[in-house]
Image (cartoon, rainbow, N blue to C red; front, side, top):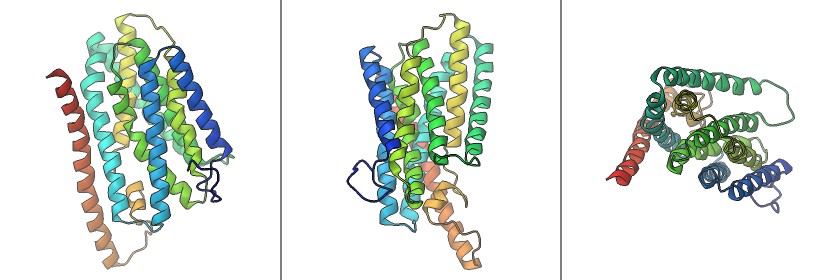
Length: 299
């Protein structure tokens, strides 16, 4: 993915990929110059997570184009673990903060954030139907990352005392998202390096917003944290691995043909049942990791 000497279009670094790398470098330089160290850590984590996940996804697709249970299980654990960590972090840290500043405004903010996340999700799908010169997958992930970056920047600008662990848990889903997207891009013969743009988008959006000094009233804090809570809760639930035909997990397993015989249907059904167990276990494990980390810091 990161070597421009390779001839394969799926492995060489495209101009769009270099643009993403440049955006990330600029955001990191700006964060360091302004001493926004927490946003620097969160942005760097998001970039490394998505770029690393994309590299693993490309390697996996190159090794086994037909897919298999191992690839699907790996994706289910990635999505499940990240989603579990996000749900737990949102419930333990963001919701109490939003409600603590103003219960009613915080509650309305949470509702608004959930609806905003739903609108963003619908808008991302609409991009796939437009005839644009850019890959729809990259556009969807970039829009998602920019939205997450704006919200993260606003949260840390409103309450700088927050530790970076919350932001890191929130962007943990970037790794499985990059993994799944890279497999699709590689399969289509497209350059996986374009995923460096959405990988950099979190930092590119969060760092400039981090310079803003919002009013210090409880109402503003409740609204900011409420909207952030709703958005991240929607994202966390949206990333829960759904082991159904047509989803990313079933696609990774190679279950893409809707026309199957009775015997093949039974085999696919049992495979999806096994993957659902992995999905549930991984989501619970992601939540436990956040709980253990919190317990260790407060013991």
